[in-house]
Length: 125
Image 1: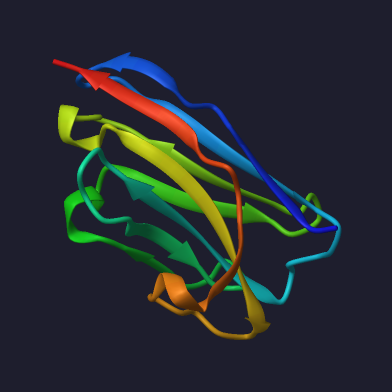
Image 2: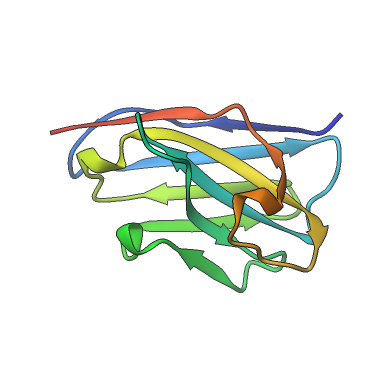
């Protein structure tokens, strides 16, 4: 059974930092893209960042560029999201996701087959 488990969420003041981690089990994702999505209250879920299977190609949504960094460790089957200079508008549930198709880097959440349960990030002003 494949599982993605997120950790590292919490409450932080604006300008602060958090590091989210996602640990995958049940299968290896060393040939698959992984991503972080988020869903704020009353809003649709959106992609935050994604990373290809080698870690050499990344994507960030415009609102987090220069503040967030996605990284992965294929030996540990993990993907992290370092979030700096957090803003109240970053408040959301953050989800880790893994693409089931190898050697791709999809942007659409419909392409991601495996999902974590989510972790809450709250940024106070």
